Length: 157
Image 1 (cartoon, rainbow, N blue to C red):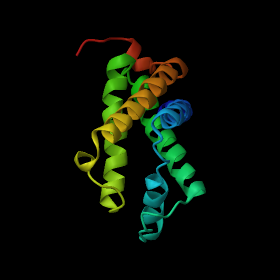
Image 2 (tube, rainbow, N blue to C red):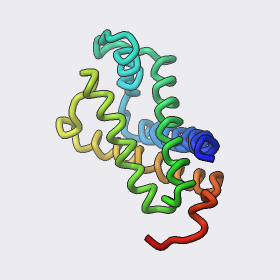
Image 3 (cartoon, one colour):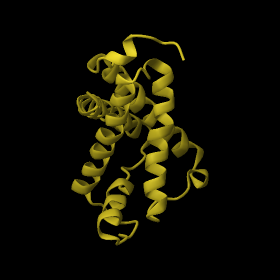
Image 4 (cartoon, helix red, strand yellow):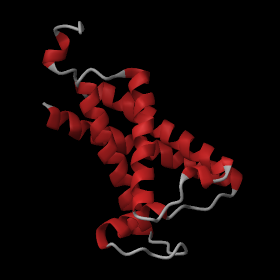
């Protein structure tokens, strides 16, 4: 049951990643902000223990990390949906999980800088993008993932 929920959540995470990516591309058209290759450099650091220079732009690896993280964190949201953690509140909490996942991996590898050192614009763009990801992921997961049978019996704690 939870494996199926995780798989459907991963699909929901891919939908959320698509929404986030489209929104980022639209924002970049307006602001002129360049693409970020931090995800790709993070994946390389995680898998090889090598840090690429900040000027490195590994597009294929960047997409693998971007979409892979979206699917992986989406799997968690699918398990939450099966467990009864649904709706906008679950999606709001899920936003913090997505932000924490990225920041933990980027900073633990030394690839990223702590978010409080970023410009206000970059902070807003990151939080807004991750919130959009989580709310789209949550909406799709809540539709695709049935509530676990034992969660239907009672809501008493």
